[in-house]
Amino acid sequence: MKEYNIQLGLTQEDINLLLNGEISTFNFVPTEDTDYNDRISISIREVEEDIPLSECMKLSVDNK
Image 1: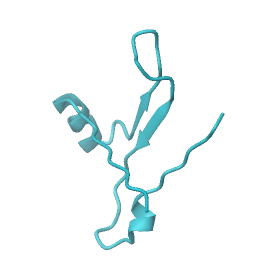
Image 2: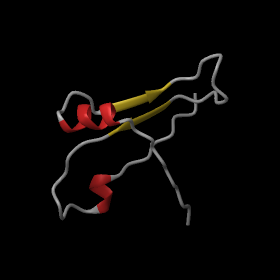
Image 3: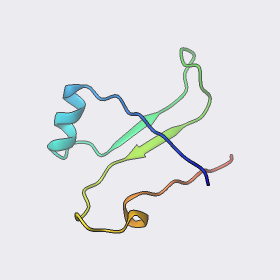
């Protein structure tokens, strides 16, 4: 079994934009100042309360 842990730090402005529906995706793109080379996208959407976990979460990795 694999275990994935994601911690996403958001500013109050980010949270407000999410709540207002103004943003739904965070893109982390490497630059000269970052210590990672991978592109990471996190999409957030609203779901029903008793939806199965497989409908709420999806992880895909594209090896380019």
